[in-house]
Structure formats: C-alpha cells, structure tokens
Amino acid sequence: MSTPVISVTRLKRSFKSGSEDIAVLKDISLTVNQGEFVAVMGASGSGKSTLLNVLGGLLPPDAGTVTVDGLDIGSMSDAALTMYRRDRVGFIFQMFNLVGTLDVEENILLPSLAGGRKVAPAALDAIIEKVGLAHRRHAMPDTLSGGEQQRVAIARALVSGPALVLADEPTGNLDSENTRLMGGLFRDLHRTQGCAFILVTHAPDVAMWAGRVIVLRDGRIVDDRPTAEFAGPAELSSFYERTLNDAI
Image 1: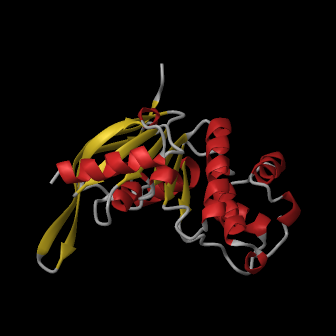
Image 2 (image 1 turned 90 degrees about the vertical axis):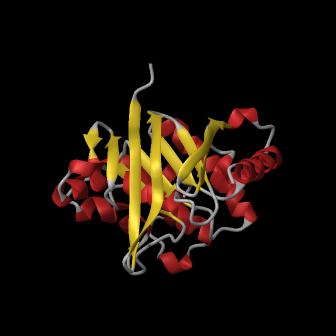
C-alpha cells in the first residue's frame, strides 16, 4: 500500500492587501503518496505557487492541517521549519538561483553545507552523473547554457535525498528543445529517486510528464485525475480549458 508523503486537509491561506484579506487558497484538501509525480495547473493567481510555498514550509497555513513526511508543518517553530526545508524538501524554481562565484559542484552542495549536513562523495558523484554534468562539474554558472543551469538546480534539489521535490515552473526560462530534454530527465529522476514530485506549470506538455494532474481555479481544486486519461498534450489542453470555463 502506498504511503502518503503529503496530507492536506481544509487548507486556507490569505494575504493582506491594505486593510483587506485576499483569500488565495480556499479549503484545499489533497493527498500525495510516496513515489507520485503530480502536476498542478492553473491560471495566474489561482494559488499554484502559494500551495507550493505552504508545502515547502515557506508560508504558514492560516487554517487546516498540512502534514509532510509525517510532520505537521503548520505547528513547527522557525528553527524546525529550517531543518524541514533542509532535510525533507528539494526546491526547483523557474529562476535557477545559482551563485555566480561558485562552480557546479559547489552550487549543488551549497544548501547542504550551509545547513551543516555532509553529502557523501558517492551521492554527489551519482547525481552529477545522472543530470549529465560530469564533464562540467567545475564550470562556473556564466559558462553554462540555460538547460545546464537548470540541471545544476535539479541536482542541488535531489542530492540530499529529500522526501518531497517541489518544482515551480521549472521550464519557464528554457527553450522548447531544453524543455523536451528536461522532461526525460525529470521522469528518469523521479523513477530512480522514489520521492514525491509536485510540479507547478501552465503548460500541458510539461504537465504530461506527471502521472496525475490537479487543476486549481481561484484557490480551489476543480479537478484531479491521472494524466493517462489523456492521449497527449493537446487533449489535456482542451480538458484544462474546458475545466476552467466550467468552473466559472
């Protein structure tokens, strides 16, 4: 039986705009099991990135419960959340967030070293090999292509063996060829790492990398189903547009 890595019940999250509270996440409930690869789709402002930030321990929930890898992150102290982000979660962002004065290997190791956690040399070698950067491990970020920089960011997220990987529009700054190559890499790494992957995207071709797609609209889940139900990105795109229109 699959083990839940994420269990969210009646999650709500708002932001202040002057004296007004703007509700961004409204009564979200979902479960993601160990080894699942889930894509979250939705228009700008639907709450996709806010959901990712709550799951990653970057934003606290206003209401509801959020349990990740057995931890109730809504009740954790700032110090405990720092350890949670370091030890349990790997982050991959649209902006690669590499440190320009550090080489590939140093960028991959930076979060672990900053948190006082030693990465085994064999684990470092393995992840550098998996992302295809063995020949570039001592290159500086400004000499790397966009695709190579994103592969450094992926290796950085995975090197510590997290229970959960959160990717926010990871192909947003890549061309179509690098996006295609990234799809194969994501699927391969998900299969070999065995952790839960959640990927936020607006692109149906990217969402098809996952085994399941969740659609958000105005802070609510309006659909949740396996991507195997779709023949390809075009069919998913039609379904996505239809779902958003039906939800109005």
